[in-house]
Image 1 (cartoon, helix red, strand yellow):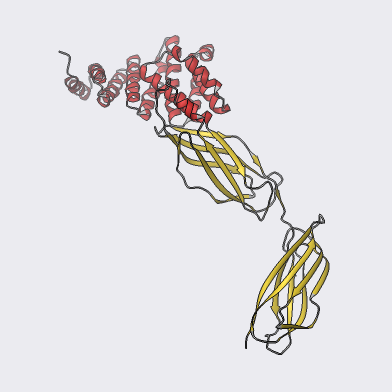
Image 2 (image 1 turned 90 degrees about the vertical axis):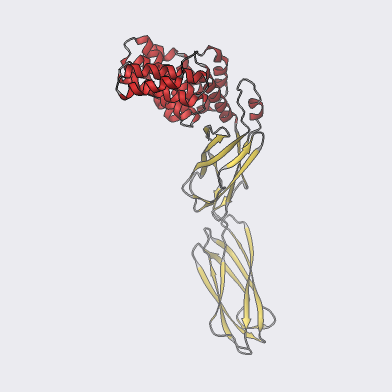
Length: 432
């Protein structure tokens, strides 16, 4: 009859409490192995944690590292990647104590790669690469350059950086050669699948117009297409079922003249094989030499809660021009209008636009109930420059009470000679 892991754990706890760490580590380790074989992974994880801690107190770092690897692997079986990260990353602290260069180089490469994989699953690629760069200083240069685990990390990093799936195929081709344990190979499959999803996600951008003025609103649409992922997820190599992804956030840069007016709510669910359209509305406030939108960063996760950041490095250029000149008209009664009595009406013409108005022709139309008794209903102006204004006055006599409408017809040319026409109407009331 085999040993009872609960009894071994109780003994280990007594030895640990009495600071007899060598025996405590031995019993914790044995109990952890039995719990692991019985697939009681949570208990095994706890045993490995205290076993490693015990051997660290004894400064038996080679044994502690062996058990930390076990703890990382049992965490992977439970898909507790953040716990696996703690175990694997914890080994790196004790590797400087290894006197044998070959062992030290090997373990630095192995555990830094396993740490990188866990960070990859959490969407922390930059943090993972910083770790690898730090390890490079502690490993023989030629060994670092040729090591299979370091090259594996390089393939993954370059694939994401360049959005190039051919580097992921290199990982796939070498998969059987990686000297990893069962759970570690599962982790690598999961990392490789996540990288494939990231690299093969397709994003198309479009604007609602080819040209805008500073008075327009810009509608930007991003269409995210997961159809290319269908074939990848049907590949039996991965043995991992992913049925949807979630877009949790989208960030992008813009030139200083643009501000966001409307944006979608997040998070957005996107079943594999479907498309998702995200619409943004932006407002240009002034002109700059090269207005732009981009690059774009999408923060996503799978329904397995694996995180990834997809970067669309496109920088979209915009054609933003000044709006055509326009004239603002306002009417002002200089005396109260009374039936049968003449009163002066002042018409104010203002150019508050960004361009000059040339060869201006104004024609005002009054209803029959308002008789023009002095002045002319047409006006011609050679030019009305930006921020210029002029007034035009005539006398009217109301014939009866009521609510009427005054129409102003406007014609002019912009600085390029283009004809512009506008019609503005104004309500006008005569009271008894």
